[in-house]
Length: 477
Image (cartoon, rainbow, N blue to C red; front, side):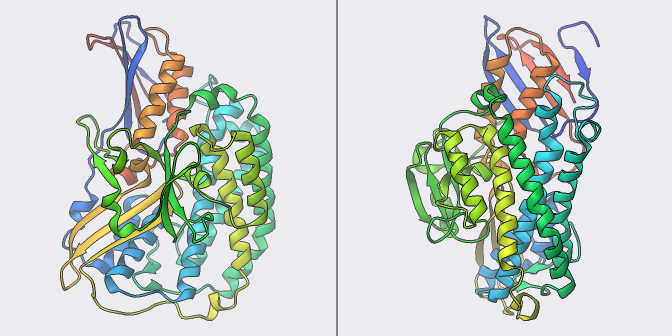
């Protein structure tokens, strides 16, 4: 460690954030935090190099944007292809797509909760960063770590049962899916349902028991009013694949409802800033940046009328009671993920014995019938839009992707600033503060590979600036 003002501290292991980012924190004349910025420093290029590719390839190509949530892009792309073909996939194909998305939600949320976030509150915010990770959790509580691994495995194995691969499957295609569920796959899923339900109920009990201890984090980790956006079903129920767009405010009032993805540009704007490659979507009627909104599990639980399954509905009622109504703290993202896992397992259980999943027709075949298509789906991290324009031969002319992490960009920046103002009092950055700022970002479980469409190393850089722009302190993970 150097002793000058621009010192660099290297911390190992690498941070628990998916992607490459840095944070700048600015101090005023009194060494109080005046602003903070979450920078995404990778170039976003997927839209450009997809130009000229056949539309039929887009599901397979865009699923490779990320290895954590490939299913999200696979399904959104396939739904966009449905629009360009102007077909309705067979009902069986829709059910199978929905099952795959439920499995994706399960495995991704389990990874976020058990592997990436729980070491903070189970091992301590200020514990040794070398052991404040899933391996430290394995040493401290091997049964809990094993529970998380098995729960994630359940979701991943369903992805393989359906699509023949755990990641980067090309199973969902424009018009439907390539193959039905097999008898063997159905039997495996049924055999693991009881254990998976037991695991998620254990995690819910554990987390609810920690809420009192984590009261300061609840108050400072992204506790602010905003809009919430996501898909809901016909009767306002929790939705993850179809339905329509709804916005509610922090009091639970519905601001806009029955919105269609086809005209998303009427209600979503995309601002840019010179210090990040990640765009800033906002709700157009309120303008930028007042149109801040959040997406993902917290938003989906705030906008829905019910979860559509009995145990998850009970948990939703308790969630709203503990949050005091609408949950406006981003720390409750962790809680919402667990409820969504429970709902996903219940919904899979409700459909698994339907015989047509094994015997039914799975694909509608057609040619290019529309030159533009917009598809939407709920990724684990939030609402995902795919927008393609093609020529008469189906070759891509233009692509626009609005990903969940982008939708949360304004909220992530506000959360970083709130945590910094709560904990930084002076020109030094203690380790525990760095971890809390990082943990504020982890509330959103950002997928920066999705948001920037770039691969590479995954460090976090945090910089502290004086009012005159002097770099006071810097830390890297």
